[in-house]
Length: 275
Image 1 (cartoon, helix red, strand yellow):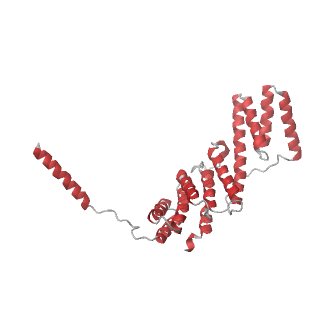
Image 2 (image 1 turned 120 degrees about the vertical axis):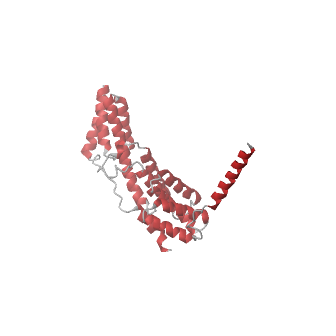
Image 3 (image 1 turned 90 degrees about the horizontal axis):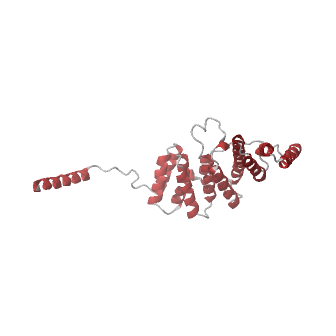
């Protein structure tokens, strides 16, 4: 037994010493300056290699936690995470930048990026190429996106991103109203007429001047008729007729089209390639 224990101990020592003799993986970033880190991360971004870009941005901040490049890396890594499809990490990185640099001249971009991430996070690979009605999906991220853009516009009304944020908010508001109409129609099919009417009332009161108001009023009329509420049905018919006559319901549907690449916007804005 003693010989067995001795042999086992020697074997363990041999294996440990053998492991120490194995060549260690070379750190390619050894000796890199902050500017070198940033340049390589920028090249990776331009090549669409977001995983490598994230590694370099985070390596830069880890090795050079202070200074201009580190601050830029904290913001740029949020965009890299977004492009890599890591939505939660992108929002966390943007929130971190906002928390650490609330008065930085580029903090408006962090708010804008949060809105962009939520704006796109429900779009799968298939829905990017096959037209679908996004208003039928869970509105949670739509509400988050609207609130993110609203916060940007409130805090930085003169930001270069404010106009685009307002356009997106207009689109999102129409989308939310349309979602309420979809739910109201579902309730109608299930015979839940009061619930359908209440959803329609929400559209009329909360989402005025959206294309969905006409649909909501029509559902209200039908729901009240089913419930035998003739007076409420007549009121809804009167409101619908008056609005149709005045043209108040002639609101154009909007399909938001991004006029400028978000990636191009951030690189141009920060002038990161001019160092």
